[in-house]
Image (cartoon, rainbow, N blue to C red; front, side):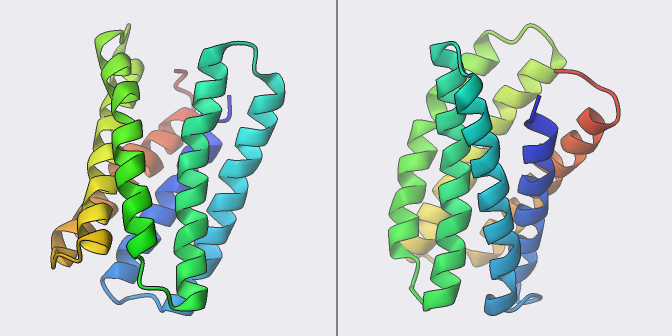
Length: 170
């Protein structure tokens, strides 16, 4: 029910973070979309948790909160001037934590949207892994990480959100 809302803002934050990573948005200004997306996805998670009836419902909330914490951490790093190594290690935790969701979604997919969502989890795992390599290991892969962030924003979040908002049903 809340998937299109969350995806729309995840798309916005990933696209804008990609622009920020390429120097097109300032550190101080990128805080706004990261805080907004963290709050929106955490709000969605909170409402979803109150309606949770199954372990799968709770898992969905937990996975959503991984996104929320990531965007909150980006905002805090930009406000404090932190180097991002802590966020990098958290990103490794997230990259590994979402792999079972990707696997389960792909192997049990009953249709295109379910398969697409499984592939999105796989892409997000890869993206978080790039953040780990960039931030925690401090490898100079800014260019590929920026392109992956922009691509993930458009292909795994923004465009699918528009499709879901205007008619397709998961």
